[in-house]
Each structure stands twice: as C-alpha cells, then as structure tokens.
Length: 322
Image 1 (tube, rainbow, N blue to C red):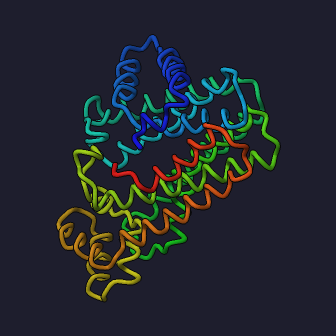
Image 2: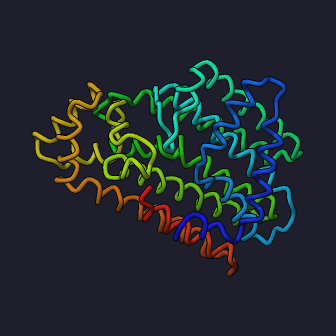
C-alpha cells in the first residue's frame, strides 16, 4: 500500500494541515520564507502529523484543533532535520539538496530555530497545559537523543540497548507525542492515552530500525540519500552492532575500524559483512517485534477506518522500501 492510499481516510484533513503550515510559515524576513518553503516543498511522508489525525479520528474527534497540533508536530520534526543536516554535513535529503547545501549552515540553523519557536507559539495558542507539557517534554527528550547520538559516534562499544535508547529519544519520542496528542484532543481517558503513546513509540522505533536497514540495502533513487551515510558518519546502528556481536572476528574487526574511523573507504567490505552475517534480517526482526507491540497497544480501540489505518501504518513501517 502506498502512502497516498494509506492516507486516504485523512486526505481532507492533511490538506487542512498543509494550509496551516503555509500560513504559519509566513515571516517578514525573506530568507526565512525562502528556506522554510523550500523545506516544505521538498516533501516527506508526513507520518507524524498523520498520526495526530489518525489517532484523533480513532477517538471519534471531528473538530479542527488537531490540524494545528499536526502542524506543530511537523514543524518540530522539520526543525530537527534542518539541524541534523548541518551537524551531519549532509548535502542530500529526499532526493533534493539540503537547505544547508543551498543556503548555508547559518541560515539552516536559524530557520530551524524559527520553526521551533513558531511551534511553541502555536502550542501556546492551543491553550492546553496538557498539550504544552507533552510537546515541551518531547522536544527536550529529542534534544537529549541528539546529544546521545553525538556521543555514540565513532564508538564501536555501543550495545543494542544503548542504540535503542537513542532511537526512543531521537526518533520515537515525536511519534509517541503525535499519537498522544490525537488522543488528548479526542478526549481519551488516561489508559487509552497511554496506549496511543505506546503505539507511537513502538511505531517510531520500528520506522527508524527500517531506516537503518535501508541505509545498507535501498535504492538511492528511492530514498533520496547516499547509501552508507551512517557508516561514513561513524554511527553504530543496529546492523553494524549485530556484525560486531555475531559476525566472524575478521568481520567484527572490520566494522569496528569503520565505525571508529568513519568515511566510506571500507563500505563495500562492510556491506558484504552485513549481508553475510544476516544483520539486515535481524534488524528487520527487531522492527517487526516493535510493530507487533504497536498493534497490541491499540487493540482496545473500537473498530473504525482510522484504527484500520493505524494497523496498516504499522505494517507499512516494516515493509516499506524507502
């Protein structure tokens, strides 16, 4: 199932979210408008705002407040991408040049700051302390995840639990917040809200684990990024950790050296070690286990097209090719 088919139940709502995004991106500063509009036009799956809409719909909500919250989530996500690309010195994302490659690092960082601050303006406007607490906590945890990932770079002694912690902080936390927000606006009771949050957390973890698989197996034309980017940056992702734990001594030594030194010189040999050790299949197994936990978390929700879409989203997160 394509993303377009998956999002069919919320197509009109996503259009409304896009309109909120366009309106809220306005600034009297020309460069801010240029960079922000470029980022939004560059695309993306919009999974996080979709989660707000799906979970709100699953709770029977039929108002419009979830449009604003979905846009807030997208702004937080986009701001983190702008900063990530500067830190990682990336020049390609989703098949397009990154904002920092076009406008420079300073512009990308400051526009990221603009998006963060605009997101906080918007969440204050919602006038809900619960919503503000969820989003403020999520943004803080994401920042901690960024620092944890930075500390792990070029560290070949990272174990699986350490790496999963980075995923839960850096990536899954915003998925968790998005799913929780839909529950809040839909009037979910505390137990249901917690289940929706668990769904988002497990879904986000599965999504990132598949990203790790695709970094060593996808078609670059599909992903819009260079294969082996994580290795070049010295990031010890799960496929690499698996090789070091379960590969041959020679394979483990090869991967250890590649992580510690970074770069792409050993990419072909590392890719062979990953394939021969079954690391990609094992990472997919971890992702499937997370998707299964996500499905179990929302088993108590009443039947609806929105619940069906959430279940399909769990399957999509694991089966996708880009």
